[in-house]
Image (cartoon, rainbow, N blue to C red):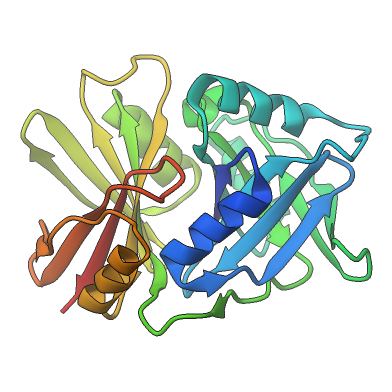
Length: 283
């Protein structure tokens, strides 16, 4: 039996952690539950854990002198090429060894588990985890790996009644629907809940963590690599959240019926760290 795989967290690359934390907190209506650093990698971060996954703001920390700077290199390359925005997709499991075995049976070369840690800025509290990695081409060059936590991620602290409660779906642009099926369904074992044509593309919805990974596959996208493109964020009070954002000088569209029956949506047009963001309420 395949081990269960979820969307553990989504990484957002940022230039200025403190400024981006304020921007993200205003959009979400939360304070981060964790603020800290990765001494071994030379980065620092802020974590916003929502109902079903968490968002990680990740920036290079110039004060640190890491022994291993592969993450700084990847982050630098991304920021130079794309600016701030969606950077990585991290999968969670309770059994890394079993997941690695499952992936190897699919012909994927997977690393042995590697220990990692992070400390808060006071240096008094630590988080620990293990990860496994694979070659970038396996995920069509989306920065990704799998993680198993040995300590919990504190929940984000609500600071507004009108707030985001979770991630509804993550949108990926791809030119290869078959490769998406192979990676998310066959290699990782995530359920393909729906596949259907839409205009000139194929939509694939992989379901886990009470959210969807929505792959939009079309010939017009990059032939060699996939791209993390946008987020749909869930709320219980779309009208109230929209009003709060407008009062904070964040540009938001009018509310309209969503593509999915029984939903209302609106589009965030500023203050989203360069990420196309849709706000959605399920009625």
